Amino acid sequence: MCLSLEWFSGRVERMQKWDANGLSIVEAEMALDEYHTSCYPVAIEMAEYIFQNWTARRLTLLSSDARAVLFEVWHEVISKKETENNKKIEAVLKDSEIGKKRNMF
Image (tube, rainbow, N blue to C red):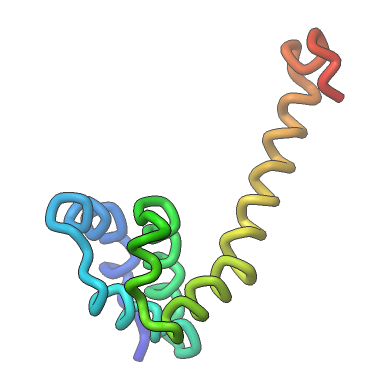
């Protein structure tokens, strides 16, 4: 199964819905189960949302398999994105007046 362009463009609306109505454990686990399929963006989006919005206590409600996938996504995808973003920020700051004045680099 392939995800449609509409699915990709609906990210903001899905997150707003989860913010307003909550996100069930079942829905989160179903999305995380998609990680090793052709629909892996579903799992990545869900993992990003969970890490941004859930407490550690809420994470413990996920099944052990779902938690394993969640941290697999963190290790393989999310942490690498953050590292790349941090490098971009450092490069901008290095060239900026603020970075030069503060001798940040």
